[in-house]
Amino acid sequence: MKHKTKQVITILSILLAIIVLTTACGGSSKPGITPGATEKDKPSQTDKIQLGMYEGIVTYNSEEGCYFIEARGARFPFKTDPKEALKVPLEAPGEDTLAKHSALLLGMIGQQVLHTTILINPDEEDEVMPAVNDLALYLQIANPRKFAGVAYTKPGGKLENSVVKGPQIQSLDSHATPETTIVQIKGPKSGAQSTAVRVLGDGKFIIEGKTYEETYRAADFVSVTLLKMLCGSADCPDAAACATGGDCGCG
Image (cartoon, rainbow, N blue to C red; front, side, top):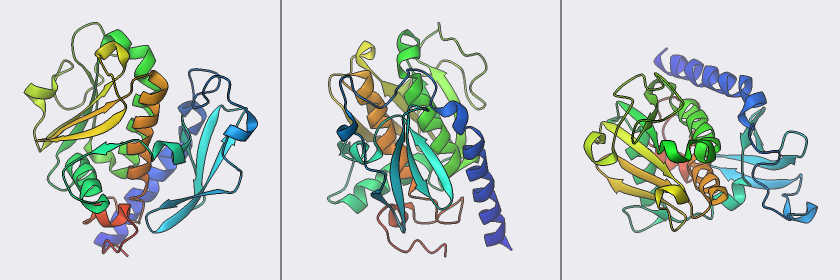
């Protein structure tokens, strides 16, 4: 019964994702396509991507201005090409891919985590919001009960009461703990000079891009990794196994 309840929670989360698909690609007319890109730069309609134990197809819809991963009967939107997003460097503890993905996933939404907050600088709110929207969507798909909302590094943000747990103004150093994790999204206006996803430990994560297009790509790296957890359980006991195609024990 407990396992069936978890499956229902996951199904509801997927349905939520499908409902918001029509607004997930708002913003620029063709998010995810770099200036001057041509048809050959876009993924093939049969471009496959491995999602843990499942396989998806990457497509691009020019009318919606979105990339999609089509998997398990659903279409999941992304601002950038998901296969290119997976090339973003992941700086995390561990000697191999399994250990690094474990540090990312379990540190962000693992069993010990009470909730996760996305943190942004209000000076670049408009520029980073596409990355925020993508990451927020997939955090909620992976585990809706652990997403606490969007906070700001200082006053001046457009959103009000956008955090359900914790203050509206937060800092990575003062508010992040292993139980109350914070994912800060940074673009050029916040001083980002490289593109990477960084797991700093003690509940601190940084997603940054040297351009805003690169910021979206870095956020999509995390989003694709979270999507790999769709194994049938909202509380996967071994997220690292799911992310690398192993047996997480949920089946």
